[in-house]
Image (tube, rainbow, N blue to C red; front, side):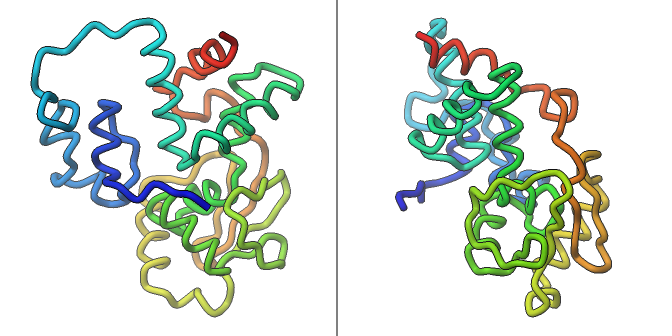
Length: 209
């Protein structure tokens, strides 16, 4: 499968905000977004052009795509699925993205970033309801139990990630047992549980044109 292998910090600077793609680096003084608050490239510090309505819609879509680590086709397919669901399309889109196994693994703290979470899933270090699952896009449902396989529970990287996640707090729609490295997807998150700096309505308007 195609994947982005360029600089992740460059993507954050392009969007002008932290997308939390580099784990602990995003919380440290080394974060390039804090040190260089302008777009990358030789013209990044030049005069900022006024962004058009289309540009604002496009940037919001790119930002959400990059946060959750999806390519265009994957993202478009997720959006089309959200359109077919009952309810508000934009909120459905964000909930579907939060249901991805790699995102849930990240939210539970088994990895410091979604990229690392995808790697943990790919390496068959995660089980859902006692069954090994190595598909990052697997949709987790309420009541599903997510756990680290026995052979990976002593990995220092996972233990360190869990300790830091517990200190920052686990989302209210998840339950976490840090001592046994398992958690439960309790319920679908509501819009108030999701990042307030995302404007999903712009994405809906973009795809509706």
